[in-house]
Length: 429
Figure (cartoon, rainbow, N blue to C red):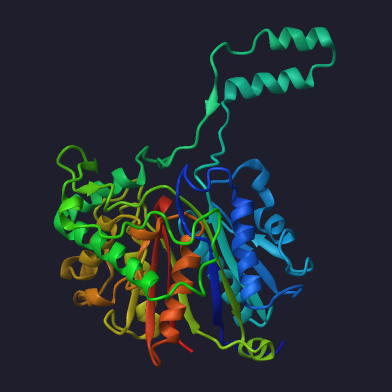
């Protein structure tokens, strides 16, 4: 077989619904209803009615059993052609980012011409199941051959309710991401003031983006919301400084303001090659240049260098090497604000000579970034963080930023639970 040239991959547009705090505006919604709404908004905006796309890739992290084919079921409720295949993707908080990479790789290889990367999550509709004692006994009741046998089995049902309630804690360490990041942040000497400044900037940048109309062609109203309801307009430094720690004990530096809250929402990104975009009359916004995933040994490694949210540090280093770029060679930086402490820890590692020599095999530190280029239209601290939807939000946002700045380049960094990450380089089309 003769080798085929890789195709350029472009982000052509995006759509999401406003993100909502858990157990709020979307309390009655599901992963499927939210993802369908995000996809339908994309279909309407880009006139994709009855269009057969190459593939739609998406997923969620917090899923009920009924969500085993979430992306397919969501597509069937949209106005896309039902002959469009789908695939479910899951990589913790990097789910949306990995969906983008999945579609990008298929387009680059010439397997498809177009596709959508998407994702959703709701913690308002948690997958609470039966615990093993109750579940095993119910199975025995169901499989009994006669009524007397069923009654005998039923009589042995546990008197106490035995539920399996989902937890954000990592299975290997028993620590919630915030608690684990508190240890990593302390090891890097992350202080409260720096975290609070990132939180304030996130809310101010998001508010300004709404005021500027930046999201007018990126968001579809849903569930009575027209903007992210986690946004706090007029948030002050004094108000943020007054909050008590929520991770790291009484002397901790992580608070409800500089940590993301549980959030519901969905997002989608339209992608294609140049020929497909031209046939559809669509102007590419940005080109996907490269991507890199990584994982760290958060279970047994040093929490400073192998902390559960430190994988982006290594993934970005690999991206920079492969593309012969410096950390400073970017006009925009989109770093997922799982916690402000994570962002500061990441920046500290890149700017630490010893860390870069020992762990990245570099002669010196990667250096600092210009903070005015970081999450300039708001980050996860302000928008909220529906796990499967964050990647799509970030990629759609940065693609629009790049479209408005010719000859520009962006770095995307998304940390994920279980010590993983996905990172990307995009450039203006």
